[in-house]
Image (cartoon, rainbow, N blue to C red; front, side, top):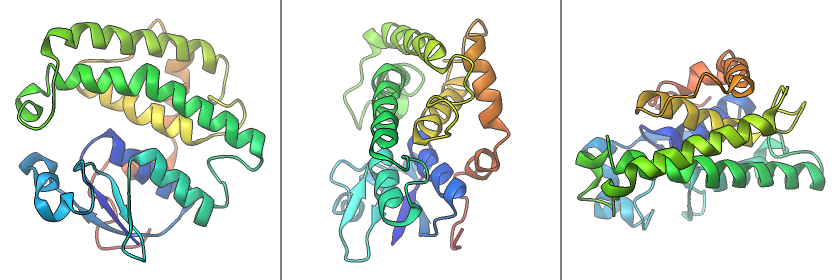
Length: 215
């Protein structure tokens, strides 16, 4: 298998997953700044030009970070970050869905309509007039997750999961693009600090982590 990775929070989700589990795949860096992911050869693998992209041994491809992590967890990771039981996996998927809807979608759209507009306006539908409200939606979503995580230590309680990886990747991204975590969200701030010291966090901070190597 080969993972096509790039800058950005979505590729980081998969890089954190790989670092947490030790699952080994070949990796190739895709330069989204020069629109390498929009070229015909890449779009033949990923119709929407999305990164990350996992190319399977049989030539088939999977895009979308959560789908890639779920596939790896089910086939190679031994349910390490989804859960060991059907109930645990269901709870992880519930939390991933919550993070995706409340934070990932509005934060990303808000960024593309504001700071990211020069890069994305020729590639995607962007909503500059709605950017401020989208950022407000993301901030409200983070406030709701502050209540969910509570005393933690993790979103699913005592079990670190894919939901934590997804949320952390976008909390870190938000801090870099004008959507920092509100200091009043003390539960989430403490959670962020716990994730920040995990080895997978440092390993995934470099977008070219593991190029040409197996991890």
